[in-house]
Figure 1 (cartoon, rainbow, N blue to C red):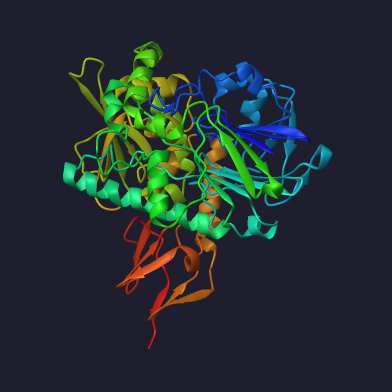
Figure 2: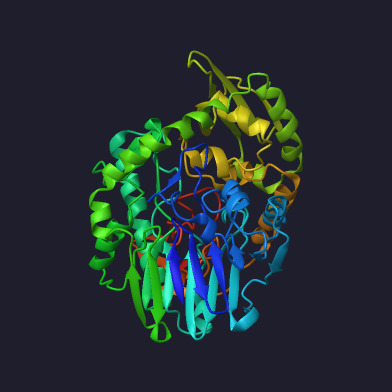
Amino acid sequence: MRITGTGHASMRIDTAAGSILCDPWVNPAYFASWFPFPDNSQLDWETLGDVDYLYVSHLHRDHFDAEHLKRFISKKATVLLPEYPTSQLEDELRALGFTSFLRTKSDEVHELDGGLKVMIQALISPTDGPIGDSSLWVEYDGIRVLNQNDARPADLTRFNELGHVHAHMLQFSGAIWYPMVYELPENAKTAFGKQKRERQFDRTWRYIDDLKADFVFPIAGPPCFLDDELWQFNDIHGDEGNIFPDQSVFLSEYAKVGGTNAVVQLPGSVTELTDGGTRQHTTHPTPVDEFFANKRAHLEEMRERKRPIIEAEKASWRHPEIDVLKELKKRIEPLLEESIYMAKGVGGPVRFDLVSYDGDEVESIVVDFPGKQVRAYADEKVRYRFRTQRELIEHLIFIDEGDWVNSLFLSCRFSAARIGQYNEFVYAFFKCLSEERLQYAEGWYDEHEKAVDAEDIEFGDWTVQRRCPHLKADLSRFGIVEGNVLTCQLHGWKFDLPSGRCLTGVGHKIRATKNN
């Protein structure tokens, strides 16, 4: 089996029975804020795109690159489609010209031509990617690989059941806007960033230990930020709170916990798995150590080369003819009327401050969840506030964007402030700005709220429900108790055991009893 690194979470898997291209991403994403690093735009994509199968794990734009898929990927390829609750991924791929689809069943092995086997595990909570994330398992001639990319399964049991995995590809770096965009003192922002960076690695070590693959491939990050306004987010400034460590940092951190089996791929690196998957040989276009030793120079060269692309994107965002308040009322108010669980979860108004093109004026708009309306800000107290450029909201309206998380928020082109805890319902709602997504998310929260988890586990002096109230992670694997606080390391959520109160977000009370 041959695995060619094609950048970020993308790879091409070649076997005698067929080839699979995964998550090809080349063009900038999220309002031209994210770029793949190392740069993969100069690979031979005409050849790489001539494949038998295409796997797109989910619709995040650093995995689903519509422009690149349309231009370079063979439309003869059969799409390996995760079992998602909505049809949006298939619909968007069909619009790009793909016609052949294998609709997989989650956690079921599908045998393709020539003995090639695949299984896709789909995650379908409203907080998994843009309503869905997934992992791809592949087996050919006794060699098994798991492309987990940036999915976060509660555990990897299903993959272990299918036999020993030889190559494990997974995310280790950040893919979020927290805490960088929050209006906090710099020392607090650094402390929160350091905590998040450590949690990212802790979660990665747990997944690696669960699977115990022969080889570990750190993938799916970090992106790089080439716009001058976002340059500070690159991990080249000695900031211990930066949440975007690269593969060279992964190697040093992995070594601290005894890891010796990591394989780093640059775009164009080729790994051959032989001897039943127990041996690997990797060749690189440039020595890995040398490449990352010159990271700043590579980024600076990319910044100058990509500057015209960024400027062209920025020029396309302004739509002054759009009445933002009027259009948001038309789009969002019908969804507010239908929302029960998410509206209740948000529990108050959310304010957007829109800064004019010249920066001299600010229009404040409130999405009033209890009042079920979008209106001008009335000088009231709000718990969540976002501040961004007006043209970004204009562009979201202009393109009829139904997922502001997969556009505005991941762009980091905003600032945020909040009173109190993180509220997942705010972001869940703004990724569900369509009838189909809203109805699915409301139904999911309805069932989630009704679910009763009767199984318990012991943590020293405490008896605690086994499944995390947040997203059902197995606390026997991901739970850690320090004093009276339980932390679920899958997403970093904390719970006060004496009261059961969630210390991280709104809701999600845990069931816990002190043993006599």
